[in-house]
View 1 (cartoon, rainbow, N blue to C red):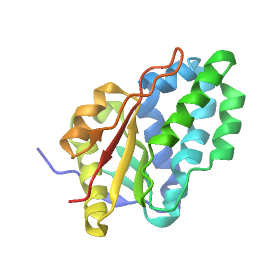
View 2 (cartoon, one colour):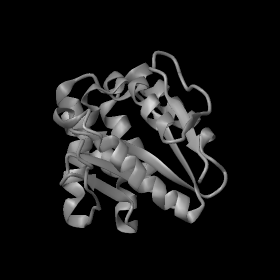
View 3 (cartoon, rainbow, N blue to C red):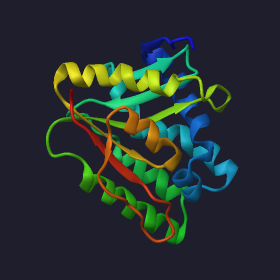
Length: 194
């Protein structure tokens, strides 16, 4: 199997990273539970992806695999998602009890974040037409080399149980399970530096 080429994205590639992650999340259990309408998903998801992971781009923490067939948006220690914008988008596109449950899921996610400086992976995805080719693993290896070189812990939440084995292969361990009301389960996971 050919090894994927992973590069650090620059500002001109923001749209490419967001687009491929939006494609990858089209069947994500948590995302589609929160936004089941295709029209709402397509309207909200690109802006939500940018708010959740886009702040890492200026810090060299967004990676593309094979010219945009996959992307990972990391946040280095001390860099946070744009929570205000995320909240506004959720208010606009998620309704009723689902919104209340989703906000509670995000609150619980915040409780699992390590208290020590850490790299946070809010979003990683591969174009569904390219899945199964090792692009997700290549993206993980690339970023985790940086975490290991810095001696810093890595943290993520898996909103899709299909992805847990991938994360475990890269040294992540489940910390618990988050599930509120009718939400699908979310698995917070942490990895110590090697």
